[in-house]
Length: 326
Ligand SMILES: [Zn+2]
Figure 1 (cartoon, rainbow, N blue to C red):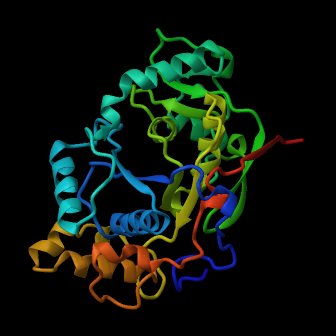
Figure 2 (cartoon, helix red, strand yellow):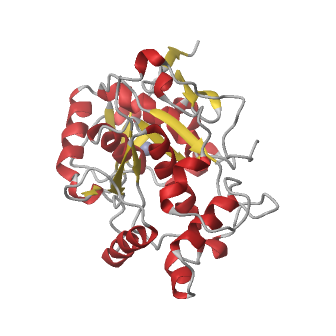
């Protein structure tokens, strides 16, 4: 992978003059308040704010606190403080968008899917699914065991979405053409778990539409989630899907992914050690090859990290091609 500028130059995204007066670019930064911001978050923030600046777009903030068991208010406060200190201000104004406050909307969307007979209750534990399917080492694929049970709201269990076997193709703005088959990767998608927590996949798909996000910019570790989110968005009736860009994850100078221990160091720890916001931004940008070394980098200069041909307008409305797998 070309890490020179963090962008794969074999897939430049050219500006299409026909569309330059077209849709407005809206992207988002969406941390979970389950811990403090660390360098990995900052790499994502650099792509999000940098490309938004380059594209003349907006950055929305969303707190992904759908997992009520792991989120804490003190982390939310710390995230907002850190962003402020870093000089990374979201656009849009208004109240903070929290998933924990979107319950009524999620229920409404779920009800629409239930009314179309697309949802069923699943009482399987992960252990049971592994025992039946063998696990296989990679992503656990649900085998459809409870498909015949239908939707049973009185029964404690998770809720799954019936997925057909379609393949989903999309053009990643950085990685190029992608083809995924969610039914074969993960099986029927879990929308709500057996403890009544909305799943990440469901919540972000609803939120990205609700918030009018046109460009989802996130780490490569979420690439495999994209096909299922596109398929879900299509089922929900989103007429114009978001475009996606998956960027490299933070690594050490040898190109190795950082360990959990490396991520244990929060942005606030750097601040406590006397580093400036520009020091920390420079350090994060250097880790993904966006910046030559750990030279200070001001938040106002992030747009300059990206080449001028990364205008996404031509793909502002990504064409999602799907077809039934033969
Ligand atoms: Zn089941």
